[in-house]
Image (cartoon, rainbow, N blue to C red; front, side):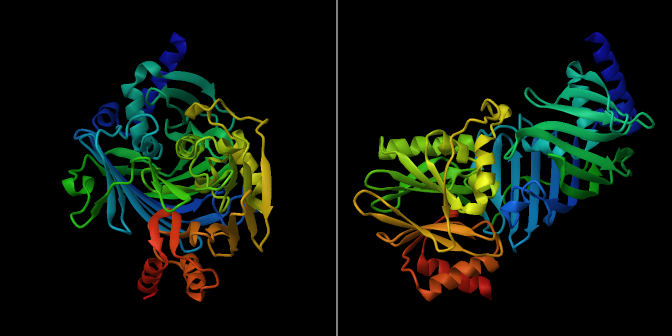
Amino acid sequence: MLERLARGLEKVNKAAEAAGGTQAIRGLTAISFTARGDTYNDVQGFSASRIGRPERDGRLTVTNNFDFAGARFSQRTLQELAGGFNIDTATLWRGGTAYALRNIGKEFVQTPNAPSPAASGGLIAIASRWSPPLLLQRALQNFRSVSWLGEAASDGADIVEFSFDETTRFRLHIAHADYRVVRVEAISPDAVAGDDVSVVEFSGVQVVGGIKFPARFVGVRRGARTFDMEIENVAVNPTLPDALFQPPSDYRQVSDDKLTTTKINERIYEVSGLGGGAYRSQFVVMQDFVVVFEAPLGIPACRQIIAEIRRTAGDKPIRYVVISHFHGDHAGGVGAYADIGATIVSAAENKDVLQTFARARSLSQGLGGNRGDVPFAFQPVTSAGQEIVDAGGGRLRVIDFQTPHVERLLTLYDPQTRTIMNGDLFSRLVRWNKTFDVFARWLERGDVPVDTILGTHHEPLTRDALLAVAKSGRR
């Protein structure tokens, strides 16, 4: 044990010296940089058949500002995804308060007494993976946790492991020749595998303020590339203005970050406040059972939704869960419903992916690890749609849309209340695009009478309100 500690500390100190000097690494009080490049996401994409074989999904730009001396952090993320989905969000943290900014809508959610972004699973831990000097600084700070593990067969580098925080351990691959950090590994929750090793591989060198940073990094998950980014605009110990860490004055504060169940009409309810307020899920209380729309985020979030359904609908069984499409943020929690015997309703081509999601249990989220024995009742939906009928003859319709976002995007429609529930046919977080236009044109035709529109990513809207947004977005 002592030998591995000593050897690990030796490698970390040599890597810090090679990166600009141990004193300089320890003296990093602030840093900013932008990562820009291509993203590949095999739990998103256009077709479920591509899971495990990811293709380029668009452009990604992430700007990070770390102010360790002032206990401040900001990160802005711009995504230009296939299908026309452009997402612009930011996360700020200062003085114990977190702000989640939705830049397209000029809104923000404020959370007082928020966990530090440097805490377990926080954004600082994630963004630090892209910056070897920050990893080395944390390894020097947590030197008692350092351990030399051996040499990597793939690149011959020394593998040194250390604790970034109380639950996260990173493995650094430190090259023999020049002591550069060429690779970092961390265990992360994974929608497909439950947990998997998230890998970042570094290449190239740029020197800023006497400290060496990589010029490029590539992310790898489950053996497949997830992003390919260049590092730009690096600044060492810059003076960072207050404006970077607080919402702009023309942004509107919204309060939807607390889990809330709202009655929409006589039989439809909506659970909001999921995922920092960016996600919602609806359920319909039928005569003898409950139908849920979407299984957002993951099993922990969906267990919260189930608790809200039980509180509202009592012991009526949750019989069906309609999944609009296979993307992980809409279907990642399907295992919570499979556990209670609900039937999963979705397009036939989504079955294998959804069953994989149901089996994936993250040990790092306290879920006990993958399970092969998860019951999985599945009901496929044809392109013609489907009806769900209760004992009293009450009906719901599953309607199928073909869109540029995903090849089949299902909705749940209640003819009794003229309410439609959608996944990604409309979102307040995304600029108007061709997928939204598919939905708006359908509403304009009036083939199906709609008064109320509910969604995973927006507050309840009337038909006229959404068409007004469409008119504005088309200009």
